[in-house]
Image 1: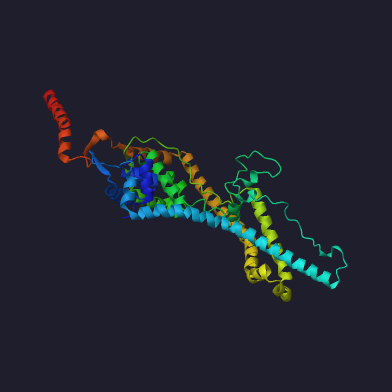
Image 2: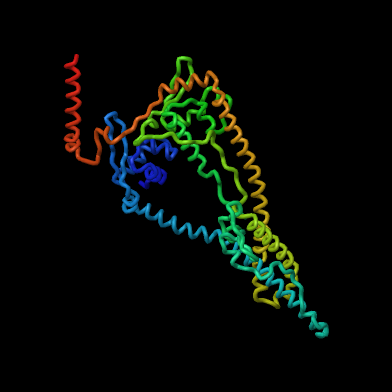
Length: 438
């Protein structure tokens, strides 16, 4: 069984000694799944079970447990190897679109130059060569002495050809030019890719901050698509109860509160952590590339498509193309691909821009709806105060400390019984003294 990366990461972040509730809250995952994964991880990585006298269980892992797993599992070794290879491959994929753009421009304009030179030479031959400078042609100068350092320098937008400029955090680009072309075409990925993980981790932190007891109104700002019927009967809390093994409790006034025993147990002292008042989705950005890089990419895209249409007209002379051969013949063969790439280079970002505007409008509505639910809690109505007061009755916190352990798999059972002998004698002596006082 391949260990869950989220479990491994949570154990490391929590200091290698955890409870099921600790891991479920840190990873934002189902409590039952977290328990199964922890048991499997402890078995594979040489972890130990620690049982407190109260019956609570903690897991302790060696700090080199990732290396132990790597030595045991060829799948984990393969995953780590592939992750390194994929980083290189993905970088090559990213820069390939910029290389294709530059190659397309070079092929198109070199072909245009060759055809125009051939046409001018043909005219000179027809006129007997008496025109004097007839061999000269005019081509627009799209750039002057291009500095190829611009295309590969990671901070292209902050490098001036004329004089150095000090870059600032606001205009710094994380990409070189070739990477920015990929960003211009396809963007930088989903900014809310880990939204569900953030949602459940925040809800788990909310529960733990309230010592395992909450009311429905507290969790509502972190959920989506709550209908009026669900709001009236608090059905939207059911996924939270299912994920974290929560239990509903009914107050004498008939109001519901919810407590989560598994999240009330921790392997170390827990301090309340700050969380956002509501779950805020991040808006999609067109690109993280700098404005200068985007303008250059768009400008080269326009130059590429304009050159493609000029070349299309010149390639109509089939006899001339066949006579020239070489690079012109090659470009003639692949011209449909060059034209399709040139059109797609400008159309795809336009479609993506329109799609982002539509997507961000929906995100804004969802964020607004969640923010409105925060106001219900802030109103401090008598009903809310009554429910919060009843929920505090179920608030609790259990710390499974080393001194409270009744059993651990780290040592032999007989050794543990001997270690516990003094503790048992002291307990019996305490009870005898109490009976004498009575």
